[in-house]
Length: 132
Image 1: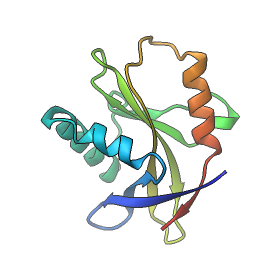
Image 2: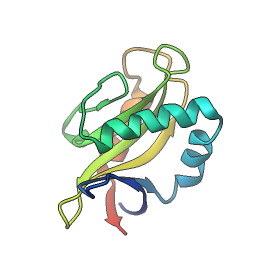
Image 3: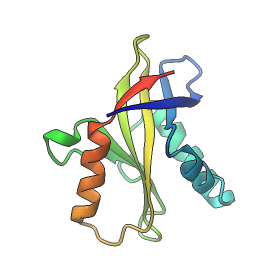
Image 4: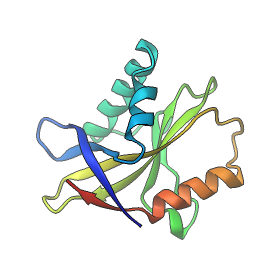
């Protein structure tokens, strides 16, 4: 399933970037821009990604099986609303490490993954993106 995406933000050196899935971009942007709290959390998660840091409380792999390779999740308000933006990590032809925000999932209620969440993660894992 080929999908389009577009660049939202990139690191100062251009080696890392965050893109948005074109089909889901309106929903994801509306979520991020909902209020200052959401904007600040997205900025924190973006900084971690763009600086190449690791913080599993904010951004981590969702590697549940062979269909979900390179799927990650931005974790918003863990222990509260527990929202997620499921992402796919790819490398652009220029060598840039790209994180594509693909699907918004609000109000994750359990610590374990439900079948619905597994299906979303596997779906994102199957996405093939055209980097624009």
